[in-house]
Image (tube, rainbow, N blue to C red; front, side, top):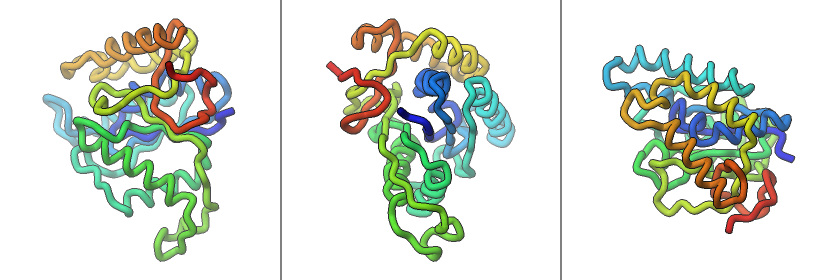
Length: 236
């Protein structure tokens, strides 16, 4: 059974929307979940300056995580400039070693948004580095953390990341998890559509669509490696 999960998004809100219902389900099932945002997503507000919006986004990310029962971290990279470097991957690998997750969740690696692609590549690279023998000159003082092999890597379904995405796993979302997610995500203005795209409407409809295909009232779709641990339901 999945007990510890890291959900790694390019910006605050990415994993809240795409993985949020599944995270709520896992938490209700007893898992420990940490949402990691690699950047605040501070540059996308149509009116607010980045410094002001950064504070709002961090408050929103913290509130969402608290509402569903998760922990929350945001790293100090900048929206639009998320690097795809070993230094950034090592930063993420140290979190993986510290948290010892069973499952990583991140973006699909083909996207209209470069930050999303970089987040996926960083997660894949960090997963490898977390299980690699590294000395302090390569990893810094956190080289003393024990190596860790993460069993499962899941890629979320995101409307900006659909190039080549196809589900290999459906996770049924029970009502309690769905309503916990809705109650939490509705407090984020961008998710409600105040910046243009009606994210909550889209992902709610997507849960219903995937549920029709999977034989549940609602389901979330992921691309994953073989023999995933979250559910035994195969993709059609």
